[in-house]
Length: 393
Image (tube, rainbow, N blue to C red; front, side, top):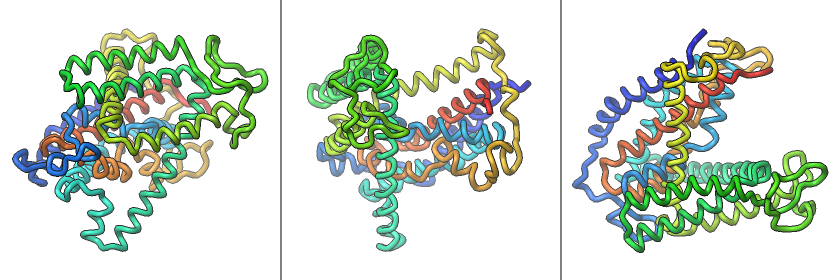
């Protein structure tokens, strides 16, 4: 039986070599120089160009790229082609390609006044290339926003506790932005206070769940849920479909309105403090999971041996498991695990927001290269979870 700790060890090994060695070479290659003024200082406007402390900007970048994809992708790939191909693609592809992509996108943007990757392409490839990329990015973002709104609406419906925790978290982020930038409060004490508030918000959510409408039929919300409106919301567009009921459909326009407002606010008001605070949830989840695997294996403190379940093969062949159908490993493995190894979407984050908030050039190494390695750890944790839990059917 193969121990799951080898998944973690392989990833930690290649990521450490990549960050300590390859990222240093790349930093010299792009000539990072702290004496050079970054766009955040050169064009500081209190709106988009706002210098951020390194841990704050790392939190923003990490939270922006580490969503559901680095969880779903490795689980899907591991179940179809086996855990070894998935592991190799994450452990090798991330430090050699994904982290390089994020770092170079960020570095390129700060060399071009903080402009987006689309305008950089326009300068070197031509206007037609720029237009194609910008249209592709625009349509991709519409798709991403639509899917995320759908997923969040479904989650808010299934777990109304998350709704309360999310609203508390947004209020804390707004307060933290005022605390840092208007009141000039001390950074570390404020971080401790507001991060504690985020975790307290999770407890509040469990105690006081919130829903917009009641559920139809025999279904019901958890006991003690505050329902804001009477009825089941069956009149709402999209309700009574296979994926949505009235409550989940009602959350979608609320989330879309929130997204529109959040995108228009100055970055210091919500984006920076929100992503920084949320990063601690990610750090706790990813770090706690990785440490649990290491401690549980070495000290034998887990309830059962942390080994790869027999339902997950090492390598299921080029076409994958027979039950899944015909899915060729090449190229599908490499697009199934995109976030977690390499994703072109990250260039929109690196050049769209992160480059406009970089305080000094040397911060780009940790934020661009290191942030992507952090997402790779999330992918490794997801793959480890699949390996332990197994895959029925």
